[in-house]
Image 1 (cartoon, helix red, strand yellow):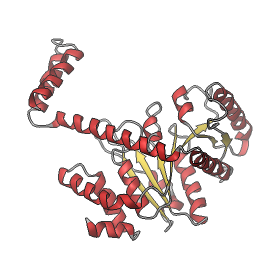
Image 2 (spheres, helix red, strand yellow):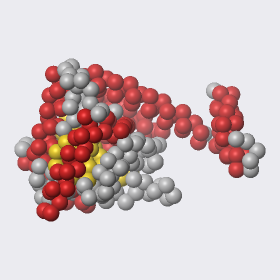
Image 3 (tube, rainbow, N blue to C red):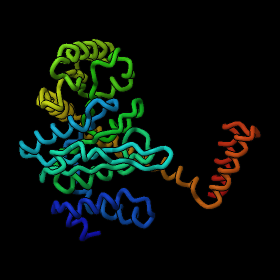
Image 4 (cartoon, one colour):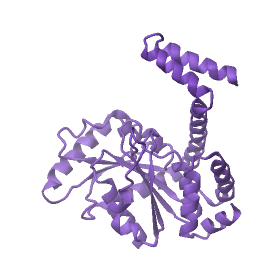
Length: 322
């Protein structure tokens, strides 16, 4: 692990890839080794800008990130992209095709694109996204972009691991507010109406005005961050500089108001809680417990127990074992 940590700190791409594979592994021995690795890397993390990018499927997240990331590497930044791909609820597999859509960034020596399966994790992120983010920061990447599945109301998980949360919206979908619940509007630090190009500029500008109007009802006092709404085109590289300017403005606002450090500390607490939930759920797969769970589920299917009674029986069984 020490040798692997040295390779990551030196920015060796092969070492970074091995480290991410390790932290993503579910094997118990790999999890233990991953924690030893993270202990060595942790003092070298925390200096990168963490940006979450989300939006409904088809909004153009991958193209947006490909263009934005290329702009940033051209300015001298080292950019890491953690692209989370949805996993099949039936087979558990993922296509992991985001990297193929980031053709420019995927071949950029100053960028590292890592697609990962969500594996059923809520919030549009992979289970090890937080740990992968630390590996990328330790390797010297000063900007980490997290592309999420775009699952809607569970995006709070993304907001709890990044500094700035960017929501990509799309005009030409009927009512622009239809798919945007209040929770998303409240979480977004920057909103960008994408695909505002060619003949769609006017309707994209109209959608931006509608979103700005909706935000007026949700915004707090003058001391709070006022979420900007801009239009852009990831495909034609139009307006992305405005989006990134607002991302930097938001980070400066966090620092000026002393919020950045407290926000990251709170995120560590939420990370701890998420790990506790995962480990409690993992007990359901332990030998003996699995059979008790299956029996309770069979009783629900047979109409012998209500779901609440079945859940009580399973929890009671776990309490008896521990």
